[in-house]
Length: 240
Image (tube, rainbow, N blue to C red; front, side, top):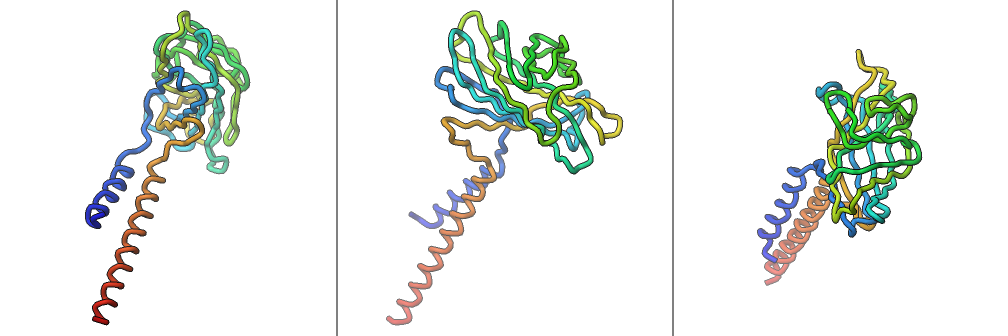
């Protein structure tokens, strides 16, 4: 392969990796998506404001079945806030929108209570469905349940449709933080999705950082090979 062309291709790969972060996108599901997992990362904010330091969480959904118009998932929600940063919080629930609209929703485990078509706080507005650690009658509340910094809540959730859709889109993910301490004037907040990644059949989608490391390794090998080639050419010339 032409060396200059090889280097150009490698540099293009590195540029793409550094210029394209893992952005949050809608999750598109159909019958071929059973077994796929999706991870959504969240910040924390109040009334549409900027992200607050110390409020972070991560939700993983795995589609386990589609039967009779019901999409069933395993969920795992982790409060990823650092335990030693002086800021504590409790994630009391999570929410998202669906297309098409759901008829009903149920859940088990840590977030075993559901509400549909309910208002989410901090300027978010109405969400299609939310899952909470305690029954409060609306998505705005949260009770005293949920997970604190470093803890994970797990369970299952099901979304029901009157007529089984050929495909389903999940989007606009949010979480609810309560029992906040360590942030002046803030005791509760919401979180919005900031990045999302997916895996199919257990194979994770490479993150930009890994692609960057791969590109750098390829360049190192290429320069090493070129250096050895040049050294061999000089030896042949010397003996000529």
